[in-house]
Image 1 (cartoon, rainbow, N blue to C red):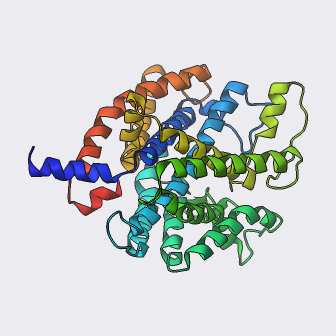
Image 2 (cartoon, rainbow, N blue to C red):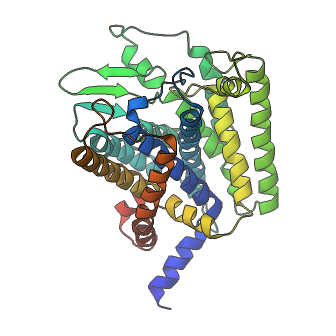
Image 3 (cartoon, rainbow, N blue to C red):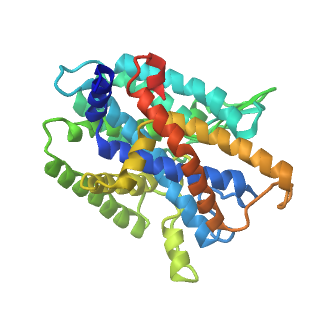
Length: 386
């Protein structure tokens, strides 16, 4: 075994497998949702979803993707804590690391990611990568605060931002642009190129702060069994709070749930949460499930977990690559087969979304595996950003 192989293995062992596995899972769920947006756009879903226009299969396909953004942002905060507290080394500041990567993500969002959606730049949509980037920039400033205060601020933002719903601004008001970026999605610039803040960032800032606050769960001194117990306790606690708040329509969601014509429709209505911006109920459900899955992944070791770990170890590479594969695939399908749903080429059934995603994942696996190996062995700084 040569020295480069030894170095590569050493880097790999420093990574926490369950975190990469969790990130890999949500990347694949994200791929499902993006296949839906590309090949099922003729039946696009609203937020919250319209139960009269959304079949149960499409509803739960879309709902599975709700796990993605909260997990990405939460794990970004957790990863920042791990960066600041490296194993077997003294603590270091994560401020510069977070700021540079945050700026890089914002740049990637307004360039590569935006072009991948429509093949043009008529409108710049500030979406999840933007939200993560801005949240990282804010965290880069806040890591200088006392650790406990970071957790308190994160909790107050996540738990309390639903109280801000009555606040609104008209486009001509002085505070409109800032408030649209922070809490109410909408267009912040209308000219030759329009700019829309699709992911209001305030709740996501709260999530990244809570992720950073959760970092000590993965400290080297934390025993795995103790960590699993805490992950399960916190996850179950979040879901229990959700049952109370949502069950009695107390707080945390814009629209109350109501009894529907069937048990299935009633279930759908009760979990039909707001994502833009993410309501407290939305975040309790998704982060609660994420914590439980991470506890479960601590004890699993099989081929499926290995595949998820590969995808989770190079998330930005997968994100950009799969968007362009979908763009090219859709253009080819539309050009060869022609439109079959108005102006769109579309799949006929929801199950075909999942089949198409399986084919996409298979096509992406080996390029991702090769890039992950290169990423973890190279000394080229910018490669680490992917």
